[in-house]
Length: 333
Image (tube, rainbow, N blue to C red):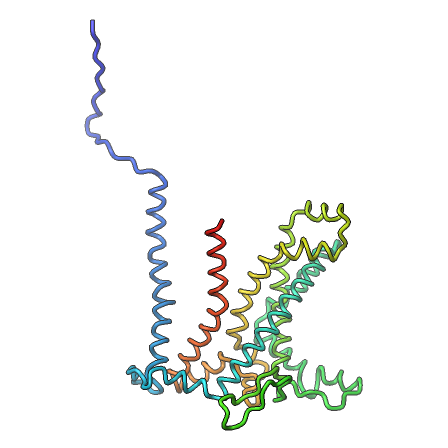
């Protein structure tokens, strides 16, 4: 007797459907969600950057009727502003501001983080005190520090009380410390390249406000260091400095890089703090690219756009090598 196996018939009114894996559905859904976001980002970032580049190369100077013909010679706007005393002062100021500000904010944040990390009583209070300035706006900080460094009050009162009869004018002082050149009216370099005295109060104010941010970054890094590493160093007889140099600081390097990149864009686009404390200053001694762009937005669209592109290139000089380095490390991993 033979038996044959037959497949039961499908229920009436139903059709077999091809099952799609769950991960494929999720990928398709994510693509549908992120495609509009990528499109919007492309338009509002790269397309607008392209428009700004074109305006910087055009003849659109002033007025409601845009002249979008390309300027001759090509790139003439860039050649024009590079020879200006104000532009050269702006580049000097933003470079000096960025270097000193980053050193003060990062080193100050590291010291504050190490101090708070090893405090056993009142850790939350100290953390709040250091973070409080970060909650303020640059305008509030600028007004307060402008009074502190006022030529007739504030710090100068203390300097006079200790015997310094002629203290600096601070934000009104055109002196440039450590000038590397002595420009004349016929030289290409029309400003002294050094450290402007008037820029120092602005640097101190910015570092004071952002040191709490750097401290928070380093506190997160310190919390991620395994205690076993420090205990092993103690067993090996390492002192405090050796533990800091060979264990703590190397493992805080990612926090340092992140803090550097985040604070860099703050330094390069500084605007409101300078406006609140000094403005452009005598001889553009405290002028920065942000103020330059703002002043020319109503008179020379081509020059304002050219300065914006130059500011973008200054940022890319630092950011692009950092991104390339991170990409190479990911490929090796």
